[in-house]
Image (cartoon, rainbow over all chains, first blue to last red; front, side, top):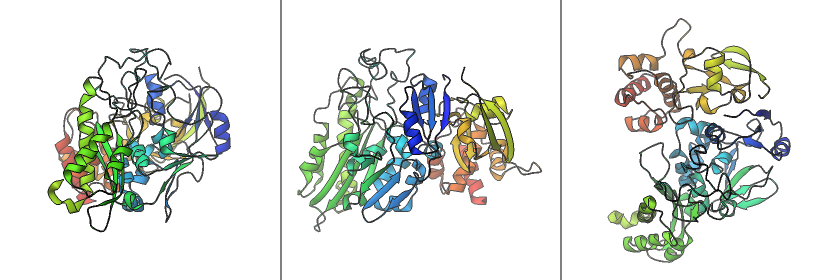
Length: 331
Length: 157
């Protein structure tokens, strides 16, 4: 790890000013920054520690919804009784991610900004070509081992997948990222890697995530995060789905549904086509399965990752059917 | 060469002063600067859990924590677990009782993680123990005995 200087910010303003300097990077939980510094992917000149900033680690569940400070840890949110009750998919997306140690360290703001697990991106010595690290240098993943790469939102420039779980749940429930001077919907905040791989979010130099708000909804309260992966625990998603479902009084007709996918795309992927195909319809298992296939509209496989195009719609369908107990054993 | 910074760390209830480069992790500060080699370096990249210690009572990975981040916090390592007269912590005793290790390299991390796992209330069943201990790898594969040791220590706590 290359040497750097260390600044412990006393205020958000100080942190913001320092972070605008070339070569400066913000440090919160450190689980991404220090990992990538050890890989040689990030080489900060100055690390600006924001963990001592006061008042940014609160978690509030009120009538309007959920507010999470950027410095709240993953474990604090995952274990919060009201988050578990009112926003189960959000709590589950966090408790199914990483390990207990990492969840105690990693913050919510940093979690959103975690970088892809693309093995080529993470190994600059062996694979100098990476449009994300070095725009215009090419993509080493194309023609390589692509089992964990994206099938949605890709281009010949980059096929890396967004690795996070929380942001998938946030995308499903219309969360907004608080940047202090502006509020940005999660879906706008993340940019698909395929277009300009070096630019992953709308964040400008010096901008700091202050928190996240998620509006209350019946769908968010009746939600699930389903994560399918190669190991039972401590593994990134092969495919995941955040789903929320509100049914009419008949227990069968869809009043509101939210669907977002993880592990398959270059950003947290909201599947509006699936939602639109099911709103107002009476659910049955066949309809759910055919509608779930719409989540893969525009999907492109790169060889090893072709299985995701088959797997992801099944994960979506299973998540929807889990939320519709009236359909009984159809799930 | 980056300028060194002066840090005061509280480790196992003792105050330590040290001058280190800002890039020095808590793990390297413990092992290379303070001679506390009980905390192990496995992957040094946040994937194996061998370096697990407690900061303000919570289990964290010392390989992904800067020493500077630990300033003003209470750090507990495996060396700080036993009682004042050397009596073993119940989790340490349970690991010996159930042969919950083979080569022993991951053991300090396993034990620090298990102590926190029990304290968090995440050791209610074998399934829950396996889930909440998944951040600690054991390449000898002593998992069955580790789960038994954690379960027994949790039942006694």
